[in-house]
Length: 198
Image 1 (cartoon, rainbow, N blue to C red):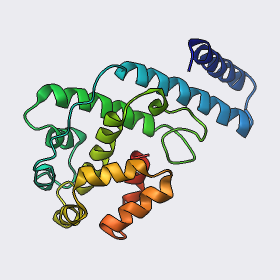
Image 2: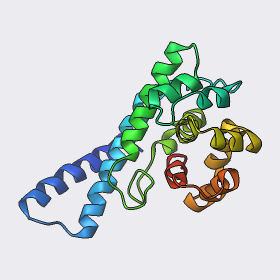
Image 3: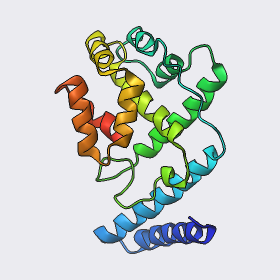
């Protein structure tokens, strides 16, 4: 996205917000376009914040054991510590990224993917596969943390990183759900993981 396109998206957001507050209710299409422009601007800002920052390498050896040792309601900080043990710099970098990505994903949207349908997402600006993998491993790790049954299932599947790589290759939510169902069976909470890995 060029600076002019970004500037135009920002102007659209500001104009639409100003018109929306002065004109009462905007149409559903106008509201969607405003959310789309906001998500695009936010995604671009997030991508720029991490541009040129390499993702730290996840320590795969023993990852499932470290995740199994966490409490079931593990915090993102605890999951990140399990992903990058004994590396405070990697933990800080990954935690900043995953927190920003989680904030982006929690934005209001009808598709459940973290941005309105049609929004340009950071991965299209070269966010990088390594950061995408870190986000997905964090989602899977948070899902299985402290759950011995889920950890044993993912071990049989080949591990957290292998599953995360498979999920990232999924072209849509349905493909990611199929992979998760193959790994875990039909248990609740898989939809959130599928959305986080998209």
